[in-house]
Length: 102
Image (cartoon, rainbow, N blue to C red; front, side, top):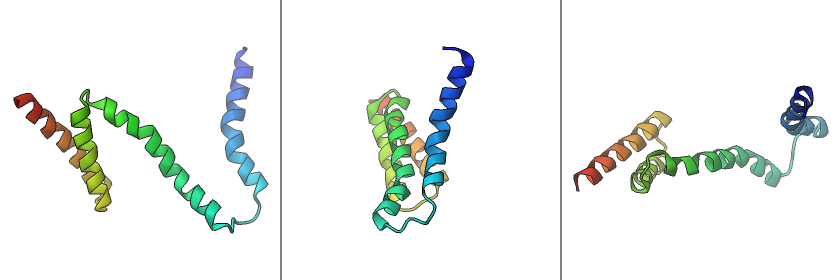
C-alpha cells in the first residue's frame, strides 16, 4: 500500500464517523433514550480504555486493586480529580509498603 492511499484511508476512517452524524442529523434529537445513550458513550469508552491499564500499571494486582478502590470511593463521594488521583496513588504506595513489610 502506498503512502497516499494509507493516509487517505486513515483520513476516511477517522473523519467519516465524526462528520456523518453532523451531515445526516439536521434537527435536535428528541428521543430521551438516544440522548441518554449518546451522553454516556464517552464515559463508557474512557472506562474501557483506562480500567485494564489500572491493573497492569503497578505490577501487583493487590496494590492496583487498593488504589482503584480508594479512587472509586473518593470519586463516588464527589471529590475533585486531583484528590481522587492523589488518594489512589497514596493507597498504592501504602499498600506496596505494607506488603513489603510482611
